[in-house]
Length: 174
Image 1 (tube, rainbow, N blue to C red):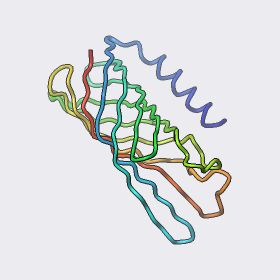
Image 2: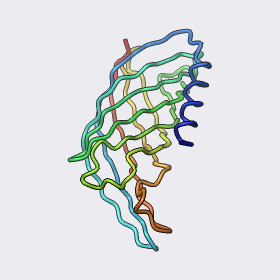
Image 3: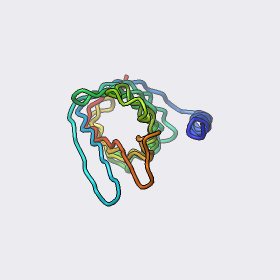
């Protein structure tokens, strides 16, 4: 409930700030590398799975250097499907086509492979860089660090499971 309240306040505040000079919408797609890391009592293990993501975004221009870009992405890595909902703040480096991005992301596990006690919802922190090849066409790379523990009811003291993701994408804004 606290996560939902936090996200609601964040979205409402974000949209109040977005008295945008310009709004563009776009599509994005690319490579997804999902990493599941597990640790318990000093023991650590991780597994990675490769796949793809596709999605849609909105780009709200606050000023020449600052944009807010929420989106919705469907991702599939091997047998597991995800829904990612990022809200990225983008800072454009002066007189260049490069931008830095950071922001929260909700990750929703669509397949839980029979593990009903695992948390389907996660809160991530996304960090990345990008480059506008043209005014509308861009490439970007983002890494999301999960802040929540996915174990849910199975969680024992000191036990932790997180899903991180690497996104390498291309996009087009209309």
